[in-house]
Length: 499
Image (cartoon, rainbow, N blue to C red; front, top):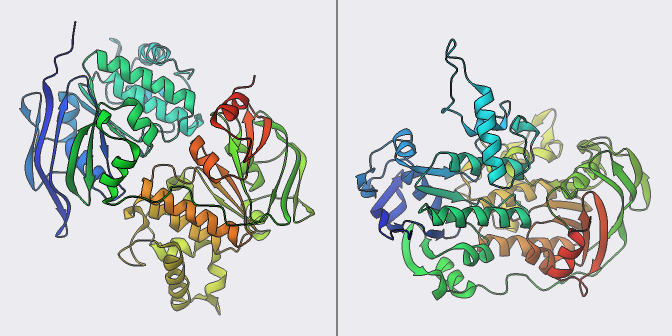
């Protein structure tokens, strides 16, 4: 039976201001049943505010939201969820100490007849069936805190599906997923489409947008710009709509020259995570680490930085054997690390830009046992200018910056420790195409100064566009070291899928 293509959601004239500044200005959207409708725009375009209005986290100053014939403009989150709109947030909203099943059915638990106790057995069975239908090998009894970022993201997707929603908003749903998991998600989305479920899809990954979307709406600076069929656009024309200008080549030309060996790891292993890994990184070089989820990329980075313990192997820095027991040791010996989970490990959300940037270099700003605000301020001002960090002031809380500017703050903090080696784990996850281009230029600036860079990324175009060499991993083993000339998407995937 065919799906009725009637509009299930109509948004018109939506406007929202904060402290007199318009975050959204007269925005519109029309969503059909069984449609994947992408909402695109740079960070700061108003996408997050728009979605918060749609799910009732915020109330609009004007405009209306009509869903399935009902006016939801003034409704709250609970009512909107009951009506049939669910959202998968970019920042995972999970309860770490509860099981996967308990998280999926949180607030919708079934009870036993006896004493009205919660029926854990039933929700565990239902969650197991749902996860199996989605093709996910995740135990419903596992605690959320034991899962990887990617696995937690897939559980959030399962939770939204379990609500039997008519509209599901997906905010960067693949930001933590490997290619095969993205394929699984797209299969789930196509299945939902055939059932008439509409998807609002937000992503900064152009290939995904054109692979999955039927329609694309573009926002810029809080304003509605255009709605077009995905088939009418290509990456270049979409970027032009998003940024209001044509963007130069996304990946900058390499300007650095390979220098002395900075890091050498020899046969390093960590029980149950990776084994017998050996590679070198030189000054002015970007070494890309590629592989599917579970390949051991992040685990290797954490071990080098002293966050996890090695069970065997040796690490050499600048030709000298070293024993890194902690991140403090790593920083002291010239290693900087930018985590894949910037909000959990990269910055302190409620602290200011200034306090976050200078956090790892505070001893440089202490005189007589007291922190010197003028010294901190001068250093922050210089770093904000160098990295082109956009903030209202040094005092603005980092939590209110765009994703790209948050990432720059973290990189600025790392650079103040004067590292010889910087490890970047998913450096452009969840940031827009314009900010990505700036991060790539920044990486080039690091290598031009003779800094060695290890870059972990799940985006193969990023690996190919930025890496001088690519180390490919599969299931904790290294399967190939490819030169820039030899590396292709097909070649990387061939080695990433080795048994």
